[in-house]
Image 1 (cartoon, helix red, strand yellow):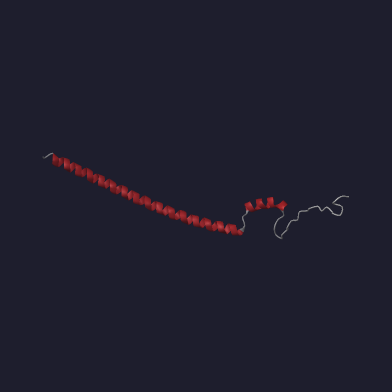
Image 2 (spheres, one colour; image 1 turned 30 degrees about the vertical axis):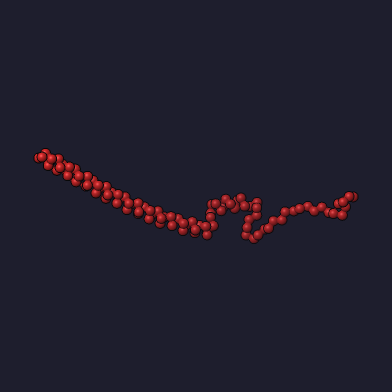
Length: 100
């Protein structure tokens, strides 16, 4: 009989830990599709709070951009006034140079 005369061969079987409330491996694919369609309540709440934060940040950014645009428009208007004053000074200078 050889060396293995007294030994019995055991067939290895896979044992799964089935837990209550969790789907088995064969049902996981369909559960993933359902999970993608309707996220869990905790995740949904977290996403809603993140969305609210992002909206607030965007509103603040838009307000600061509008304030910057107003300041830029005011600076451009001041620059135009200064250019007009410079032209007026140059005209006066040219007029006075005509008397010399």
